[in-house]
Length: 203
Ligand code: GRF
Image 1 (cartoon, rainbow, N blue to C red):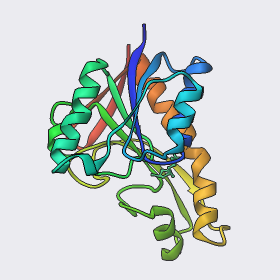
Image 2 (image 1 turned 180 degrees about the horizontal axis):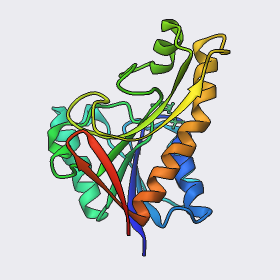
Image 3 (image 1 turned 60 degrees about the vertical axis):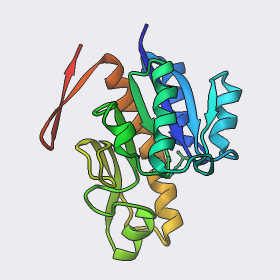
């Protein structure tokens, strides 16, 4: 049976691909039942179609408010009976319209060691700050920007990177590994949130 996963992506979808690979290689017990994008040209849509995964494009311009857009996304998730929502390079803030009904069911991959360098261009922030290490974080999504309870983090040495692009390239494979590991654990147990702390119980 396994868990029913929805992925939200705005771009090339390499993190989405890492979940696909985890399912194919059987470390994730589940299936991606829908890929939703807010960008009609997101390459993640191509990856989904190539793998026979249903897709849905939800464009902000079709809605008066961000809340209405999120309500539409909620409808899509509800209709697919989704157990876990993964934001994989999804560049929008989730409003309470979607967050409340899916509390502790939405996770995000961020390319920095939160709470350091939240928001956009996290890799560039780390490089320009002169950080010797950065990394990636998988966290529950809450009403803030990259502020939810932390599930898993991986440290990456970036002291030898010559620019922000090299930092991004170096961290990306660790994002894939870390996200895939968390989704696999979601599929075989549960994460329990106690305040800011997250612990895991295997089924
Ligand atoms: C990743 O670095 C992700 O952390 C950030 O944007 C990039 C998206 O990559 N939000 P992809 O679309 O998953 O390839």
